[in-house]
Image 1 (cartoon, one colour):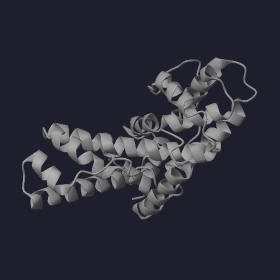
Image 2 (tube, one colour):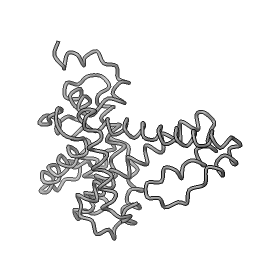
Image 3 (cartoon, rainbow, N blue to C red):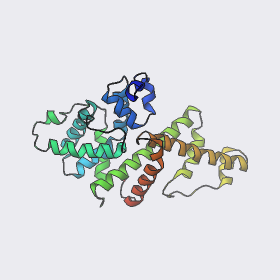
Image 4 (cartoon, rainbow, N blue to C red):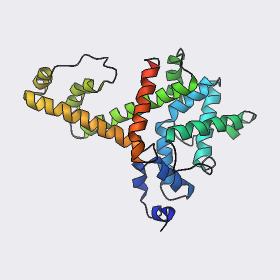
Length: 255
């Protein structure tokens, strides 16, 4: 049985946690659920792409059309035919594909061909433009800013997942108290273990264990999300390192 045949029996829900190379191959072969899984990834990481288009000098309305048009082209498999699902990162694939799309769109004058306000992937473009204007003073080049925004988007999504887990277990107060221990920039003053124990009304030893588990779960979710955007599990550490470097290079210039 070849790989494509082996994927034929996959359930749609599996794509939510499968790495992007499998999602891509599945979309190329039009397996059920693959397109929605790819759309899910695009919906999560749309803002770095939108901001990249704006940094290339396009107006906000044109950037909206181009971003939506790009996703429309991608999800109709026009951009997938030449992609190699065995190589690379979803981040690199999207940026390279977007650059090619912008070159192809340069001579187009009909906005319908560029998206025409068709909302193929639901995006909050209005808030995206507000965020972009707040970052407009950044001295980063477009590619570096793209990587930093991707990293920030990833970390926000990971934190949202961790928060949702605590909400589902009715432990919102615990999440709020422990969240400072996940601050990557160390911009918040950490509470002492004794303070955590006092606030949660647990022993000092239990507080230390809880903080350890909290950080460990955050790391697990981070690795899960990164694994969705690389070709195989061996590339997870490399991608995490690259995204950390991108955030450090941004030096707080982006949200």
